[in-house]
Length: 336
Image 1 (tube, one colour):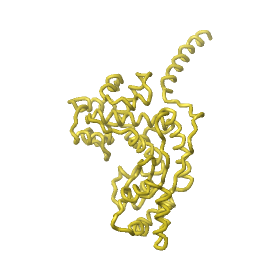
Image 2: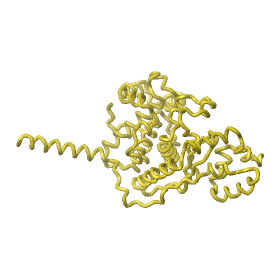
Image 3: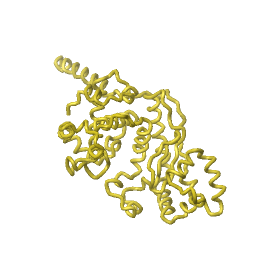
Image 4: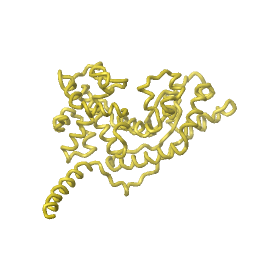
């Protein structure tokens, strides 16, 4: 029995140390108060336009949605300014109307309410980690006619609901979108896509340094921030990978890192090379037809995780403000 007690003590200490290290992103949000997220339903307001009310209805929408409405009309659905009846044509188009009806059948009020509750928790965590940064002021669910998925103009975070009708939806087949794209066009992807789109806008990537390593670290920081904001979400949803793609990354992490690190690829500033390893698609052909797309982003994520594990004095805000990708790589001690 004495032996058992002596053995358990160091194990308990080791477990405590490991748990402290792994709980880096724990956040006590019990004292953080923000306005609960509520989605305004521009999709429904838009399709309430009829030939009889369209002139007065448009004025109501301008008043209700403010500057976002102008962005929506002239950028998101790309209305023709010369056509004063464009919105009426848009909402009475057979395919647009049919798609809108699919939205109403597929994405229920309880789905939007659940999304709002989850996003409220996410925004509380954002406020915990980034107390000086501003949260979105408004949240809008809209119908874009298959144009813009997630937008964040003028402090309004918006999501296009027709992009989440399920991967077998007939309209996606009519549009002939590839399977790798429609695979994730499901309701469970609304929250991670919304958060990812918000963060990409919040943390600008426009730096003079334009190497593959720069893009890897930028997206690594973004996904690490998603770790902080969505602690209970599986990595596959954060990075938009299938189970098989996640398994490939975990199994061949060392090989992929070796490929990217050799022949000076990390410091390539050729757009073709950067795009090859960071753009969406069915796979990363330069490595293998089994290798997931955007694999350099996934490797960047693992580098940033290693960096934060090995630099405990660095806060999440410090990480996002650090523009030196080489410094992060050097201090990450990343060894897959």
